[in-house]
Image (cartoon, rainbow, N blue to C red; front, side, top):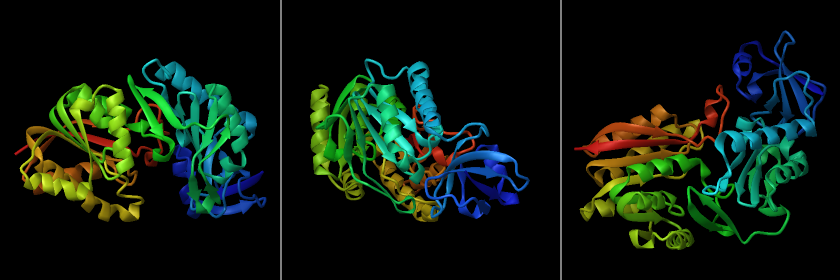
Amino acid sequence: MGTITLRARRVQPIWAGHPWVFAQAIERVDGAPGRGDPVRVRDPEGKFLGAGFYTPESAIPIRLVTRDPDEPLDEAALARRIERAARYRRETLGFPTEATTGFRMIHAEGDGLPGLVADVFGDVVVAQIGTAGMKRREDVLFGHLQRVTGAKTIVRTANRVKAEHIDDEWSVVRGPEPKALRFRERGFEYEVPIQLTQKTGYYFDQRDNRARVEAFAHGRVLDAYSYLGSMGLAAARGRAESVLSVDSSAPVVAAGATIAHHNGLADRIEFRRDDIRKILPVLAQRGERFDVVIVDPPKLVPTRKHLERGRRAYVELNRLAAKLLEPGGLLVSCSCSAAMRPGDLLRAVNLGARKAGKHLTLVDMGAQGADHPTPAAFPEGRYLKAMFLRVDA
């Protein structure tokens, strides 16, 4: 097994529990390890810090899998982590339940398997491979995922990571091909056409925030960037009198309307295809007002170098959203950008509201659900923020 020695001033984050070894932290590589090979990581004095799989071309050449110097990185090590992840979902979180049959089974670094994400949709598991080390071992991983979940079908979703030499297309790797992903979440029944799935299929990370929306929603609700309308469904099952769900994709809007009808909420939710950036000013000019406005845009800050541009985008989006709210209304502002930390988002949302002549009071703050765990020393893994704010003139 190859050995990676770190620079003296780059040891502390790894020692503290951060799972990523960046290229600039490496002092020396011994043993000529190849792409996907297991390697040991040591400090300048030779002390063992961990072991992971190596990708020499990546900006993050090693993502640590183990901190145990006596644990080999073999099939048994991967199996133990998959079994532990399944046990945590089953025993601690109680998944699956009668009401919820869709959830995240493997969350990469949070489950000790960096480079692997896997979601359960009833009897289908959708997995995404993100590193060369996991790619080399994907058949083993798929086998263990099927074993611990009892899934009939395992799907490998599309993913392209140039540095890791991954260029995967969506494909069924085990079992019959599904026509749609069928699952339940908090009692809602979903059927998502395969061609409309996102990433590993669906945004399970927002489950707890959808429950918050259901608890807080009242009056007239605007669900912007609605995708399949899950936030709007939650609001309609709560105290909302009416919901306007808006997304830019016509097929997604049609699928959302079908899901709302299936769940008996079609009479309270209007689905509309439109560009959010264009429709928000139009609604404001018409004098339309809402008691709750939800804005959950796609990732506006892909990396930290995009942070300033992303801040400006969040300020403007939340300025437009705040203008549409009745006094005392609720603004729900979300960000899935890891580079946008909670404080950054709150400042941007507040500045946007101030530009609209509104005052904000933070009433709650949400994050990704407990089936998306992260190491305590890994802030990059805590990507999802959901701010719940009362808006006053």
